[in-house]
Image 1 (spheres, helix red, strand yellow):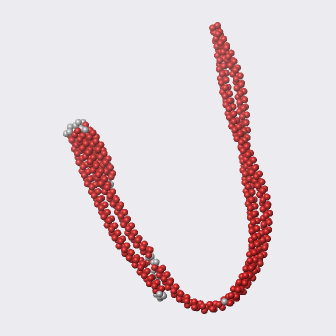
Image 2: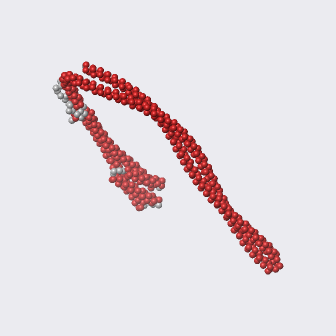
Image 3: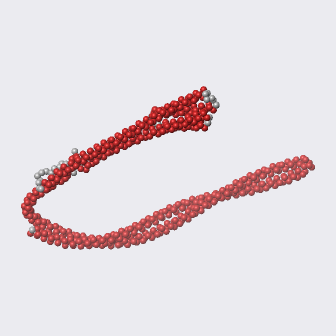
Amino acid sequence: MLAKLGIANRLLVGFVVLIALIAGLATFSRISAGDIAAAVAASRRGSDNALALESIERHIYEARFNIWVYFGTDDTSRLQKGISLTNDLIKEVEALHAATLFAPERQRQVREMAELIAAYKVRVEKLSELRARKAAFDDPELAASRSDAGKISAAIDKIGASLSEGYRATSDAEAAQVESLIALVSRLSVIVGLLATVFGLVLALAIGRSITNPLGDLVGAVRRLAGGDTGLAVPGVERRDEFGPLAQALNGWRSSIMEAAARAEEERLARTQREARQQVIEVATQRFDQSIETTLSRVKAAVQALHGSADTLSANAEQTQRQSSAVSTATDEATANVGTVASASTELASSIHEISRQVRQSSDIAQAAETEVMEATRKVTGMAEAAQRIGNVVKLISDIASQTNLLALNATIESARAGDAGKGFAVVAHEVKNLAGQTAKATEEITLQISAVQAETQAAVEAISGISHTISRINELATAIAGAVEEQGAATAEIARNVELANEGTSEVARNIAGVAQAASETGGMAQAVFTSANGLLDESARLESEVREFLTSVRTA
């Protein structure tokens, strides 16, 4: 089976098997380590729960002690401490219940202990209440409560003892399981180590023999071939490992030795054939002589045609150079004209830009004027409103003057009725009547003036409104002119850019024409070089003809 595998694969198989054994042992150790860790954790939980239970039992005894000291001494601090310890006990038991895992029976016992401690607290509070009422020690109710508390304490002690025994048994069982797992891992490690050692030794011997045996066979074959013995076949040619290609190479060497002997016989036959071939070479030489003469004649004719083509190419190159010079001169003039147009376009664009700036400035001034006119319109409108309000006040004064005049008339009538007693009052009434009349005249005058002011104000409002409309129209026209100027500026800038591009294009044409002229000059040089090369080729063809004739003469005389 190993003969079908290469040497590297054989070694790889051995290492893979050993690695698989080691990996299996490592995997088993990892799983066992997990089991051991779980068992240790369970054992630690059991120990922790047992310690917690011991703390609970200690606190139970301490709480009982303080409560019974209270009943003996009436020291309320002892009672408070006992009740506080009972409350702490309830929390500790609840924590123990949460930490008790995978043991439903112990969880039930812990829950029952918590309920008994709560009931014990109720009994103690009832006893303290009876004690506070100064009940006699042998009071039936007090005695019954003490009996109930004692029974509850006994039940708590019983459950505590059962839980303590259960936690201890669990811890011992987990410790035993840990020891068992450790022993199992140790035994398996030793067994796997022994198996790996034995298998490694067997595999090393098998691999060594699978390598040394075919190697010895090949060494014997090499020695036989070195002694000239090619009768026996090389062993191991059909092998699939590294010795197969080596055996095949030795077999090739054997074949080469046998072929060398066959070639010696063939060389003897070849000498006879060379003599016959010499005659064939003579005939072929004659045919070659005739063929080379024909070919050299054609080469001479082609060289003469090449002379004519070179002359024509040189003449065309000169004509092209002259035309390129003319085009270059015209292109320089076009470039100068385009440069002038570009400068003019740039100045035009600058002028349009300045016009656009001034138009925008006019538009800004028109907008400012429109704003000021609107402000003036607002103020004049305010004046008109103020005049209207003044007119209302004047109307009110006129109405008051009319009422005053009526009152003065009534006072005059009344004073006339009073006779001599009312003469003084009649004088006053007359003066009041005169003042009312003057007031009425003054208010009429004020009303006329205010009406005139209102009419003038309305005319001013209408005039300012017309001015505002005119300024708005001016602003719109300025804005339109600014837009048109900007468009014209953009168009002029585009024209300047296109002219600049045209200037660059003419410059590029000028450069290209210069390149054409240079190329034409180079073409003329090349045509001269072709002409020179054709002359050289003609000389070489003559020399070739001489060499060929000498070669044929040498072949014939050989």
